[in-house]
Image 1 (cartoon, helix red, strand yellow):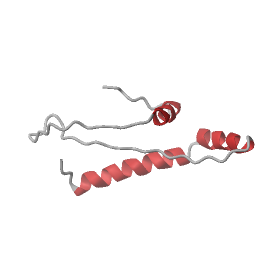
Image 2 (cartoon, one colour):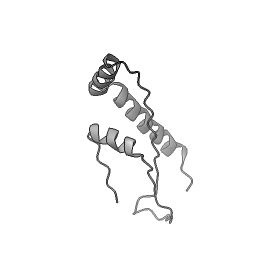
Image 3 (cartoon, one colour):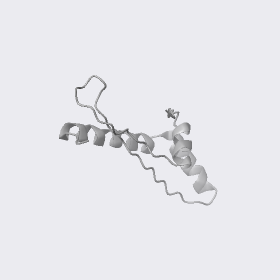
Length: 88
């Protein structure tokens, strides 16, 4: 499915907002500091894939399903951030 420039811009905004939320989280900062106090440095990599499909009310239909691929570690981090992922 081809998405327009406006949708691409909005997807970029979502990614930026998620990144800023993690960076500005006091809980994340506190956990990183506890790791440093324990003698470790941390490298955090989050991978976010956003799948788009037309709204159900749109005339355009596409048989492709949106896919979100998360590792177990991704899911644990999202759970700690109180972000719920519906398995369906």
